[in-house]
Image (cartoon, rainbow, N blue to C red; front, side, top):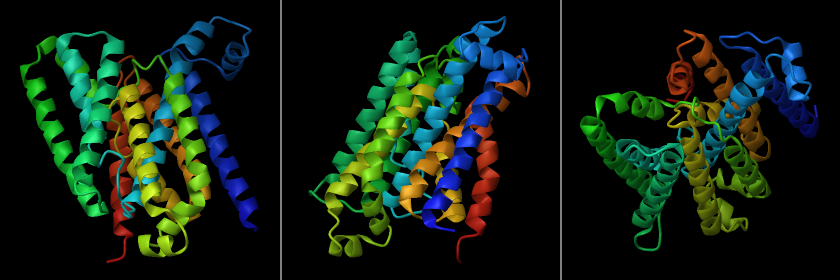
Length: 325
């Protein structure tokens, strides 16, 4: 089978999976909505369930798809940047910085836009701090960047624990749900979806160069790749994608770790196919997980990060067992 035809079939299959996940998210819930009612609501014909579909479920499903796609894309880029197939988009402390900002906003009792604003500011601060410390002497390596990110993440974790300790009891539930990942408050879906499209459009022109980087920095440089510039681009895109996702849905783990690695095993390591496939698969996974989080013990809702962890842990152990000894 020609490569282009194979890539087309894979992306088409993942696109259908994404459509299935979104359709299921619109139909499932405390109030069951039929496929016909969903279609009528989406095309603007109204109906008894139109408000539920358009105002509650559709924004949440689109936000979940965008966040899952951003995390999977960031994970694929981080695995190229650190040359580690088990790298995670949260490994550089971006999630920790966003968590510090969000917890501080909740501690002050700020409204939702204040929480989102401080979370994004915290993520950007952590990104600049990690890059500034790792850059130090005007050069950085994968190991130095990784170690700096781990230390910054540990410091952010300590600050989050301190704020949870001093927070009033009535604020703890919301703070813990945010830390475990929660799409229940993600009414503004379009910034995350726009960021996903923008990040993917910026990544695709560099896909061939990313393929060369996976073979080694020296070999890529010998073949004409501007390694220094490309590493900056990867770092910024992965960090900003993670920051937007964490700001929208809180800390959702394992999507950026498992999805790119699983697809790499299934479809190969060609970034021209892996990047868009990761976006579609990551978005579908998070939408499926959020649908389960809403329906398993309805009307109560679970943090979506709990579901992704329960799915991701056995998959991660399986993938780890397949690594060469």
